[in-house]
Length: 198
Image (cartoon, rainbow, N blue to C red; front, side):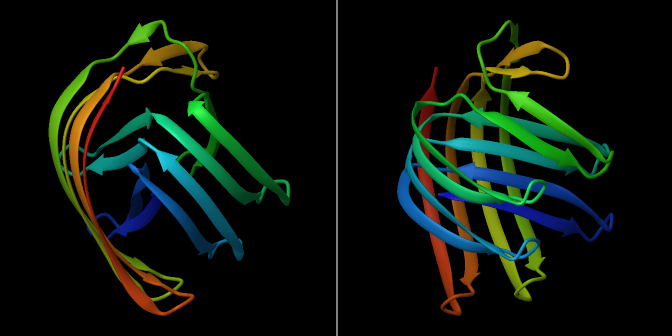
């Protein structure tokens, strides 16, 4: 599965958490991007991709984790900056160019995930519960996340010309409940996976 969640932190009244998540499964996911009015379809078979950005309310700091695994992916989406449609077919150990806009600073960021020269090691236990309201449908979504992880990821930050490596070993449990607007039904997914990538 692939999941991108952006929601408003009512305690700070700011959008503070975004998760892009792909797990061990084969899935055809179609959904409507309310901001552009376009439909997106993803075909996925593989291990995992994770992008986690969240704000630590106790310290006021932001934390971002990027993870890439082994996957076969077909992604069709519309690039709102150019108005064109893009399709990506991928099989293998991923090399990804990621471009996104940082809304807090109004700047655009591009990352190339390549080989490494800098190493960051992280070992931690996480427990996360996300609840937010989908303004396009008026429904509420809740995710319970428990993960034990040690991360190592290789990517190149083109803005600084540096490379970073993170290794990942983790156990995850994910429960996702959401509303399928095309059928007006509610769907719940329980996911438990043990992953190791070097």
